[in-house]
Length: 466
Ligand code: SAM
Ligand code: SF4
Image 1 (cartoon, rainbow, N blue to C red):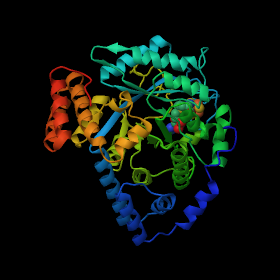
Image 2 (cartoon, helix red, strand yellow; image 1 turned 135 degrees about the vertical axis):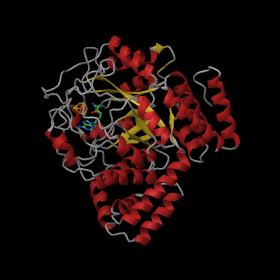
Image 3 (cartoon, rainbow, N blue to C red; image 1 turned 90 degrees about the vertical axis):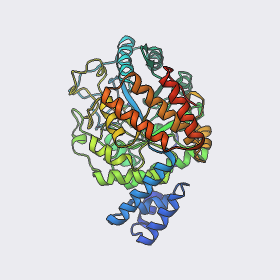
C-alpha cells in the first residue's frame, strides 16, 4: 500500500499558498497572531503569511506571541536528553552526512552490546534519564535485531542512582512488521526526518541506498502508526531547501497524520545543516538559514501546532539555544557526542567520526546550571510514557492545559532528583533556590503535588511522579 506516491505532500499547493500570501499587511499579521494566541493552531495560509514577516516590529510581536503560548502550555520546563550513537555504518549516500557509505574520512564502528552498556553507564552517571538512540542505515550481522538488542541493553543498565527510563530512537524507516517489533521493545518516540519535502532536492542530495526512495520515507510514519506506535517525531533538515516551503510541506504531513490517525506527531525537530567530515554540501548549505530565520521557524511552529513538542539539539551554539528557548522549544539535548563510543572516550571530543560538528560542547551540569539561571526548570520526567499517556491520551490531557498539573510537579521532582544525585554544589544551590521560588509561585493542586513530590525526593525516594 505504501509503494504509491506520498501525494499528501502537494508541492504545487505549497507554492500556490506561499505565492498567495507573499504580502500580508500588518493588520492581517496581527489578526493571525491573535488567532494563534488562542492556542488552537494555524492553517497553511496563516503559516505562509507569517513566514513572510520581515518588519522588525511584527517579528517582535511574533516572538512575543510564541513566548506567551509556550509559557501557557509548557511553563518554564525544558526536557533534557542525550543522543546515543550506537553505529555509524551506513549504506546510504546522503551528501550532507559524515556517515554516508563512500566517505573514507571517518572510522567505522558499530558498538557491541558491552560497549553500549558502558556508554549508558556514563550517561546515567551524568544524570541522564532519557536517551535518543541513533544509528546509520546498515546494521552489523544481526541485522535489525541489533537495534532491538541495543534498546534492551540500554534499559538493562543500572547504576548507583538510576537507569535510563525512556529510549527514543532515530533510525531508518522500517516495514510495518519491524515497527511492531520496535514497539514491543518499549521505545518512547520513533523519530524520523524527511530531511527535505522538496522532491527534486531530495533526489539531488540522496544519491544511493534505500533512502533514495522519497515515498518509502514519507510513508514511514503511517506504517509506524499502523504498527501501534503513536508517539512519533517529525523534522526537516533546514538548509537543504527554502525553509518556507519546508514548513508548509511539513504542515501537510502533520495534518495528514491527524486526519488518518486522529493524532499528529508528538515532537518536531529543527536541525540546521552543520559541517560534517567529508561533506562539501554540509560546509556550503544550498539554502542557509540565518539565526533570525531559525528563531522565526521555531516561533511559527510553536503557534501552528501549539501542543507538539519542539526539539533543539546541540547542533546549535549555547548562545543560540539561550535565545530560542523562550520561543517555544520544549526539549533539548545536552552533553552530547555524535561518534559511537564518544561518551566513554570523552578525550576524543573532536573525533572527526562524529556525524556533524556540535555547536554546544558543554557538559550536562553546565547546561543545567545555565538554563536554571535563566529560570527554566530542567526536567528529566518520563511519567507520561510510563503511564501510557501517549498519542491521543496525551493530546486529551494536553489540550485543556491539564498537563500542567502533571508536568510541572513531575519536572520539579525529577530536577530535584538530579540535584541530589549528580549536580555540582554550585548547580545544587542555584537549582534548589529555583525549585523553592517556582513552588512559591504555584497554587492549587499543582502546588500541592509539587510540594509532596519534592519532599519525597528530599527524603531519599527516587523516581516519583504523578
Ligand atoms: N540514518 C537514519 C536516517 O538518516 O534517518 C537516522 C540517523 S541520522 C544519523 C539522523 C539525522 O541526522 C538525519 O535524519 C539528518 O537530518 C541529521 N543529519 C545528518 N547530517 C547532518 C548534518 N551535517 N548536520 C545536521 N544534521 C545532520
Ligand atoms: Fe546514513 Fe542517516 Fe547519515 Fe544518511 S543521514 S548517511 S542514512 S546515517
